[in-house]
Amino acid sequence: MAIEVKIPTILRTYTDGEKVVEGEGASLSALIDDLESNHAGIKERLVEDKDGSDELRRFVNVYVNDEDVRFIGGLGAEIGDGDQVVILPAVAGG
Amino acid sequence: MLRIDQATHDAIVAHAKRDHPNEACGVVAGPVGSDRPERFVEMVNAAGSPTFYEFDSTDLLRLYQEMDDNDEEPVVVYHSHTATEAYPSVTDTNLAAEPAAHYVLVSTREHGNNEGPVEFRSYRIVDGTVTEEDVEIVPELERSVT
Image (cartoon, rainbow over all chains, first blue to last red):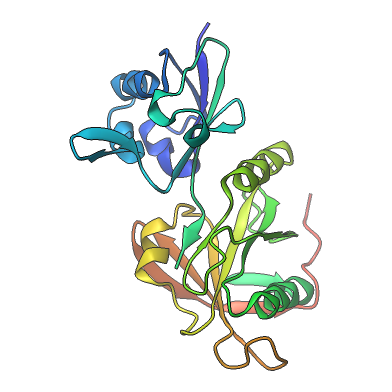
């Protein structure tokens, strides 16, 4: 089993146009590393370096089973086989 | 060019006036690939701010799930500016993540909550490049050929 990841339009350049890809990992950060190994460049769009450690970018939303990961541990959020992950860029501006 | 029906145009303007002095935001969804803004969806500005807007993250997920279920996409993404012209700010440009959408900006700076015309303009924002486009307001969208 694997984790299903929904990719937003703007990031499908990294997934050959695929809307849904599969990944593996016990945490969101492990999943993102796994995605990066198959879809080089995607990690940089999701994560930024803050004071030496990775953080989810401010205007990227990631949901695990419909739950915003910011409320369940951010990049450390636990994930398991069969979970569904959705990535959505924020709709925001000034 | 953006072709939008009068009722949807008026709904966007009314939302912007109502939420003034804060920014109002929302989308008009339409069938994938149709370029037809058919379903007006008003969103809450989670930032509740006169200078910033952001869809609430839970609302955002629900909206995209709904659109997915209906084979829709955001044909229009709109928001208001309340003290400046209806032109995308640097932040708008940097955060624009729907290259296929018409980004509609309205400005309520002149009349605020009151009656009176508002600027209503539309843009494509792709890879940080803003291109203004014409807006055609029609009584009703012609029926799609299916």
